[in-house]
Image 1 (cartoon, one colour):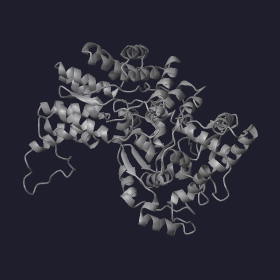
Image 2 (cartoon, one colour):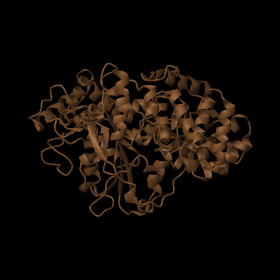
Image 3 (tube, one colour):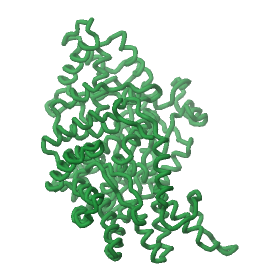
Image 4 (cartoon, one colour):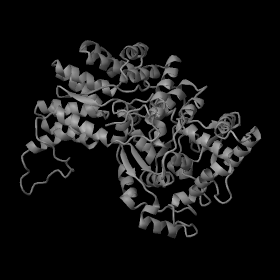
Length: 609
């Protein structure tokens, strides 16, 4: 399951990272790069950005433009509100993950494509699948490519809810090759909100990926008078009175109305669409095969509408109707059709419908507990892991445990450990440790790491060091930082600093903070300030506090001398260089109280605060 590391607490002036969900171990692959990507160039390798268009990367086609027909009748409307275009251009010159966040059909993909085309016109584009992303950094063709590469992640939530998810370590490996690598992504608003929910302990790593990314919020053109006027001028034939340009181009409002109206006018059609929508919402990244769609729709329609005679012909007619574009809408249907290797059909729902059922512009529709199990009944372990993590972020605690247990009993190491974490959280420490040790003994890095945490909590620092050292030597950033803490506390500052620097250079916030503390105690305040600034800029509250204390101790610059123009964090109460524990916990609980409960959460799931 995805690595979702826990929050830390100040221990002896250092920041210890505690429990996390397991992440898959580093992947070694001999697969050629072309087998790991969704888009290929004219020569069979990675395409140049100039060989692609936004429709090939996820933008919805319309009568104005489609794959292979771009740049003529579909002019780009500059995104001036919130300075989106300007901020994108600046972000692409750096090395941080850049994420365009907005509602479905706001123009996220088009805006990102335009920015990349202008800022990086000679770059090649790598579009992985959620399942293949973790294999990319180990692919020799990727590592040895001398050209700049843009890694394109459409709908980022798909890449953090897989068995081998996007983590800071994956990002570090992607950008570690000699030639420049830029990682960009799109993300729907409600998906971002969902990724911020969940246990404060278990969802930390996913939050850190988002926290350290450059997030650029994009709203509908209808929210800006200037953009609305520009859109109306560029597309005079469209009625933009009620909706934004991208929504109208895609025919999204009409398709959503068709979906909603079918609930009463054609219940079988509505059920077919709802099944396809919920297939995605429970974490299935694969299209739903037509026979599975028909079987599930038949069973659910018979249960929801017992007064109707639902036959196979009615279900098949509904599938045909759902996959056929409406003449009034244009190029898009309620269900998008894929062809499987055997040439049979499989379907994905129009994503505007998924966003609507997830709460865009209206209340979210809950997913029934039964559907989680119907959609994973004969699934392989990777699907169980993905669905389990998706259930976790949707607050479905009972579903998470059942899916984790199925995957663990099938032999999946990540699931074994994740089950251990869930059991530990509810107080069943005996079974939790048994699953954790089973996974650790089999070589799972996250299990090794958390077993070290468990032993550290018991006072067994020798056992904790053994497991953390194994993890650190395998490249685990959290383990590097925690190992450094143990070493520093017993006086081995030189080796502690080495591990801190390894982890901090790869982006680990705890290591940046710990390195700053170590340097501060040696009075090397200039470099301590550098690391505090880096961690504070990415949301580390303890680093922000220490930075302010350090800055308050610096003598004022002479009149007429240049000063650092970097924006300083808000002031904190002055104290010793390390964060007072009482203040840290006050901030922690204040943050938890600000979270809102998820509407589709299990009633048994407690909400923060």
